[in-house]
Every structure is written in structure tokens, then in C-alpha cells.
Image (cartoon, rainbow, N blue to C red):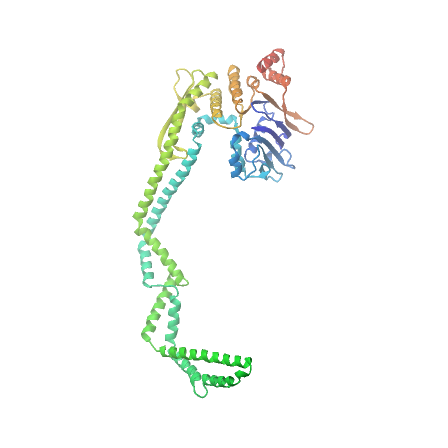
Amino acid sequence: MLTSLSIKNYALIEDINIRLENGFTIITGETGAGKSIMLGALGLLLGDRADFSSIRDPEKKCVIEGVFGITNYKLQSFFKKEDLDYEPNSIIRREILPSGKSRAFINDTPVTISALSKLGSYLIDIHSQHETLSLGNSEYQFNVIDTIAKNESVIIEYKKELKTYKALLARLEELKEEQSLAAKEYDYNLFLLKELEAANLKEGMQEELEERYEELNNVEELTENLSSALNLLQQEEIGSLESLKAVRAHLARISKFSTAYEAFHERIQSVIIELDDLETEMTAALDRVEANPEELETINQKLQAIYNLQKKHNAGDIAELLQIMSELREKVAVTENADSMVSEIEKEIKAQKEVVSKIADTLHENRKKIIPAFIEQTEQILKDLGMPNARLNIELEKGSEFLSNGRDKLEWYLAANKGGSFKEMKKAASGGELSRIMLAVKSILSAQSNLPTIIFDEIDTGVSGEIAQKMGEILKRMGNSMQVIAITHLPQIAGKGATHFKIFKEDSETATQTKILRLEENERIEELALMLGGNAKTDSALAHARALLN
């Protein structure tokens, strides 16, 4: 429940701070005194969009803070999920800075407006004057029935599975479009693929071919230079090997005199071994070098084919050509495997449709089960509110199309008078009747939900006298199980409250301010007398006011 509310620098409010109690609380005040301002501030606290123009003094920040007692409402999981400190008395604060920036805090931890709004939905239901008209709205009617049927978790599951189902349908359409496009390009893609496959491309192939081409294309130069190099190594008198062997013989004679000379001998021996190996390999290479015009032509053709493919596909190397070939295989496969791919996804769609249908059926049955009792309860409350002949009819029909909350069609019908025919709710009820129906609905919902606080903004629109008295009794009864705050112009309702606040304007030399005052018993009598008799606090009005309080 909301235990305290502080509003600073908001609209006509400079600084107010009120403490609230459980049970039934009344707020009264003249038209234009600022009751809607207070509701606007509460809306900001619960995640409404901030408006910089609502700041009273644009040089200062606007701060709205509420303390909520949440011990009995099982909100620990929400705080854990949002990584927030859980406190039995949690503080929500909203700030609008002079810069126009808005900030929100839960227990002094900065939070997003989304998180604030979600927590707010667990704490307070603000019934605006406007909401009464939503009784004729299908979405609102579904929300009422689903709340009573406890369908929240089922709807969450339904939406999850429906999302999967729609994704599969979208994938099927996408696949069909891809296949249609692929079919048009199939012949060309297949030609390109076969052309690439015919080249027998492999990683490193181009480098190997280019190297072999250079060898075959330069046979004479290779032969001449390898022969000359071997001759310099092998000549008996001036060959490099013979010279090094002579050096080795000299070093062998002195190697025993020190380790340094022994090292010289070992090193020259290593050089000779390396040159011996080099001579052997060069001789083998020289033996392999021979003119082969046929092989040269074959390699040249292969290289030209590779170069042409690279130019055709704008590829820098064989790796890119292999990647293009892989992509072409996929495109060709889409067309060649079209029927099997469509068949497979259609099987998935069929199975998922059954899953969604089953959950939709559960929603339908849950709704169907509670409707008779809901109608009976609503009609009973309406009798207490001066509509003894009112009859409510709720038509629930299972449709074929999957909607956001199942596949049901729902419509509420009302016959307000004896012998009257049923008409759609929005067409059958007057403003006062809608107010009474809305109160009946809220009364039933409050018994079903674990909501801490509900605020009614002039739920009494269009009613008076004994009906207002009955409304007050219902609101008071609701206050036995939750915190109920009602903004009202009717003394019959105001007299039922356990606590009474008055909102009023006060003018100073420089500005007008909205203030709020908690009324004690005598002040309540005077306020009720004013509500009964206009501005004149007559003896009869005062006596009537005392009677209302008692």
C-alpha cells in the first residue's frame, strides 16, 4: 500500500507531503482545486511520460516520491530479477530536472521507466474517469475475464508459442520467395557451378602451376646456370669442394693444439657436408630439367582458365573462387531440394499450430468456466446499486484465427431495464449506469487480485442520492481488504471514508498553490456540509453531514 506521498515543484504544487493509511480514504475539493494534478504526479511515479512543462519553477527540479509497504505482496522475485534491493517499505522516486531530463529510482537505485512501470502495475490501479468508457472496449473486457480466470501465465505461454508459429509461417513465405527467385536463376547458376567444378580447383593449386610454368618456360637458362654452378663446385683443381677439402686437411693437422683449432676443423667439416648435399640436389635438379612443350602448353591452359574464372567472378585468388562455388551449390540446392524443404517446414508449422491451438483451447475453457459466476456477481452488485432489473450477457465464441490473446471473440451485452433487449455495453448504458457497472467490476476484480491499492477518480459520475450511498458502502467494503482511495464530489461517498483529505487552492501575492489537508472530525463535518449545501453551512446541512459520518 501507499504509505506516504511527497510532491515538490509540480504544476501548482510547491511542496506537499501526506501520510496515507489502509482502508478507505476520501479526497475532496472544488473543481479545479488540483485533484487531477495529484493523480498526474502519481502517474509519473508509476512510469508515465514526463513533461517538462509540468515543472512549477523551471529553475528547480521536480521530485515525486512515494513509500510503499509491500511485505504481503510477494514482490521479492521482481526485485531479484531487476537486480534491486528489496525493502519491506520501498521508496519510488521520480525526478524531472531543469534540463528536461527525467530520472527514476527504486530504493535509491536508478531504474528504467519500463522497470518503474512494471513495478507500478503491481502496486496501484488508477481508475480514471476515462476508464469507465473502456467497459465497451473488447480488450478491456478480455482483461477483466482473464484476470478472474487467472489466465495470465497461460497467455504468456500462448504468446510465446504464437510467436514461434508466426516465425515459421514467415520462414515458409521467405523460402517460397527464395525458391521463386532461385528457379529463375537456376540454369545460369548451374552453368557457373559446373564451369567452376570442371576446373578442379584446390587451395595452393595456382601457385604450384605458376611455379612449374616458370620452370618449363626457362629450361635453357636453368640448365646453363645449374651446370656452371656444379662445375665451380666439382672441378678437381679450382672447384669449391676441392679447395675446402684442402683447407680441412690443414686444419686437421693443428686441431690437436687447442679447442679453438678443433672448432675450426669441425666447422669446415660442416660446410663440406652441406656443400656435398647441395651438389647432390643440384645434380638431381639438373637431371630433371628438360624441355617439355606439351606439359608447358597444358599448364598454360590451366592457368589461363583460372585467370579467366577470377576475372569473371571478380575473385582475387582460388580461395575466393572456392567460396563462390560453395554459394552457388547452396543456390542450386534450394531449387533442387525445394519440395523437401517446403514439406519439412510445413510439418513444423502443422505441429506448432497444434501446440498454439491447445493453449488457445485452455484459454477458452478457463474463460467459459468463470463467466456464469461473474455475471451472477455483477448483477447482484448492480441490484444493490439501484439497477434491480439489469441483466448482463457475455458471448464467448471460439474463432479460427489466432489473435494476440487466443482465438476467442468476446462481447459484453447489457439489458438495463426490465423487458429490455440486450445491446452492446457501449450502446446500452448511460454514464451513471456505466459508473455503477465499472464499480461492480472493480469490486469483483479487487477480491480476485492481490493488488495493494486502487484509486478511483470520480467513479460516482452520473449518480446521486441513495445510489451514491450504496456506492460508498461498496467502496468501504473494498477497503476492508485493500487500500482504496476515492476522489469524489458526493457527500454520501465522502462520509464513508475512514480518512478524509481536502485539496484546495491558496493564493499569495505572487502565485497560486495547490495544497492538501487531512481533515479531523469537525473539519469533515464542515466539508460535508459544504458539499451538501453549496457554500452555506446551514444547521440542516451540518446535521445531515453528522448523520452521514455516523
